Length: 362
Ligand SMILES: NC(=O)C1=CN([C@@H]2O[C@H](COP(=O)(O)OP(=O)(O)OC[C@H]3O[C@@H](n4cnc5c(N)ncnc54)[C@H](O)[C@@H]3O)[C@@H](O)[C@H]2O)C=CC1
Ligand SMILES: O=C(O)C(=O)Cc1ccc(O)cc1
Image 1: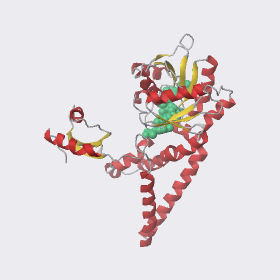
Image 2: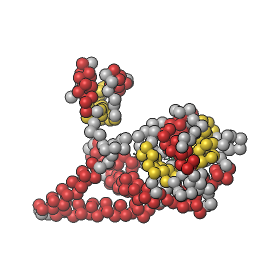
Image 3: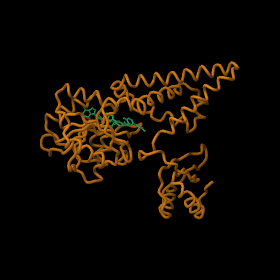
Image 4: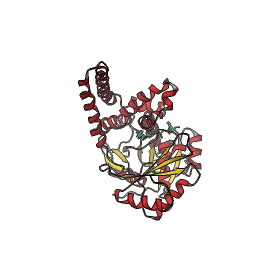
């Protein structure tokens, strides 16, 4: 069922709401912006995300996207439905069962509402961190209740399609148990690791490499937002954390034995490390299939303006698609290394082309 989204209302113009709005603007959808914080609406508007919503005089939207913290979703839905602000409604909150339950309690119209959740985000908040391409190739959960009209599902599917996401229809309770494993418990684990750094000696921080940055990146997120997410999915997250705690406790016990001279304890540690490799290998790649085996081409780049642009120019010239890019800075040196992930058959072509043009490819 094709659903035309000509006008979309975004309520909550923070990271996710503004990213949705920017993605829709790329398809010439008219986007109306609302937030209880006027500064957030102003910044989103200035970024080109849309125009201010005029609740009294504005057009009725085809779809409203409620992009506020989980605890406020149901009350916003009720308010918008009472104003008849849109034909259909969705939200993007990281937890699903609780907002749907609350919406039912408040007597919201569940026929026009399909709860959803893009599995894409950042450790930063607010419209300034928004990206039009945030959802490209990322899973986007849809949790329709039995009451939801097919037209409401179609409208939300169209939203996901316009944002470039991969729709995954899943029951709300199952969604919450799943994201406890892949998002919410990992967040708490990252916070626990990062908390060790709060009073770590300067020498330790000076030795921090990419590993600890990777493991703790999401710990930099807004604690207020995350308290709301974790409270909304408390029991499933607690269950995963209890399992993680058991593994950590066993690893510590084994290491104590090892420190005490018991060499057999290495088996326990190896077992955990191997289970970790197996789990990591199961994470799908960016388009949802099995993780593709990209090859990384390393290029030395000087710390000067325009270097990356020149590098991408070469990729463009030789028709190589860059799947991912990472920059490593060499501390104290005026240069760094750009790591370009490319398809295996493109690596040799790109390396040769770069060398021919004078780039240093180790
Ligand atoms: N941060 C992330 O990486 C992801 C977050 N989400 C979900 O998206 C939702 C929004 O999160 P972010 O955009 O990250 O937060 P954010 O803090 O960047 O933006 C939230 C915005 O909602 C506004 N707001 C709060 N209550 C409101 C209300 N009652 N009415 C109108 N506006 C209100 C705030 O003023 C703020 O501008 C949350 O439900 C979160 O669980 C989903 C996927 C990823
Ligand atoms: O920062 C990242 O990489 C994330 O994946 C963030 C994130 C946070 C909350 C969600 O509900 C979904 C994704």
